[in-house]
Image (tube, rainbow, N blue to C red; front, side, top):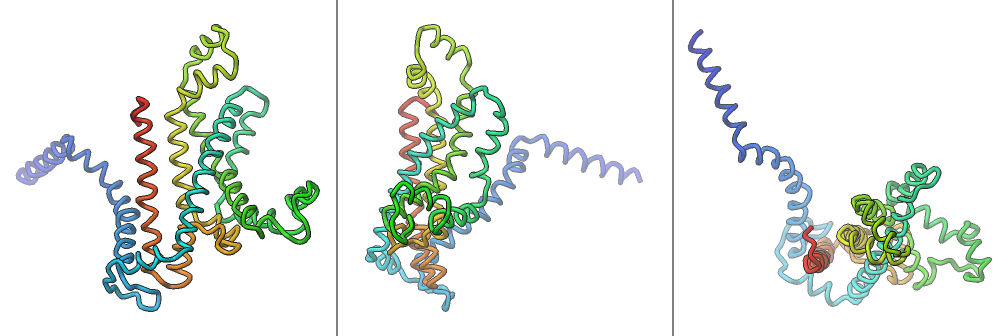
Length: 309
């Protein structure tokens, strides 16, 4: 009995010493994150790389090494290059507009007015609504005769005959950008609001006492101090835009005539709809260095400006 008690005390002491080790605790807390990243990021990325260099199709899923064949096929396709240009244009336009509108919206929501909490909650609805559901709603608003948007555009003489904004290439791309801006502006506003709330009130009061007007305080105080969080909002907007395929697939289907096709939707079209898994993976893999380069540029610009995210 005494031997069991001593063994139990020794085991308890060993567990206590193990729990006191900083390295053990650090790995214990990191382990869930490591498992999560491995299962949801590293493993899918590894499979994408493997499929990009294979002859895999939906009819022949077994792995056969193909070298650079899929990349040569993709780079020789004019639809891929057009989708790449559309992806870059869509991401750039959406990011600029979302950051501008998000900054304006954040300043408005921080003002003291009646029903401020209700308005804040309502503003967040576009971000919390499922992407596919909001895209379906916008498809009805922009593509159906008799919808409120259709009536407004016809009253303004911007639409004629039986056409809709989704039937022509320029207006279809404008519609895709508008839906992305509508959906992502609340996220940017919340991020910028966090930066605005961190600025001491005395900084604005001092600028006001110095005689600085609204625009001088905005460009001389508010904008420089919120630049780090604005850059974070820009990175998030670019990430959600460049990797999103639901808006294009539901709203326009990439048309008319591949005029609104983007790389994620094209990868899904080739890899899943048409069963060419290798080509679809090669297109999807092309997004990774593209986005990584964009993030590195933003972080380098922020570091040169003296901010270390």
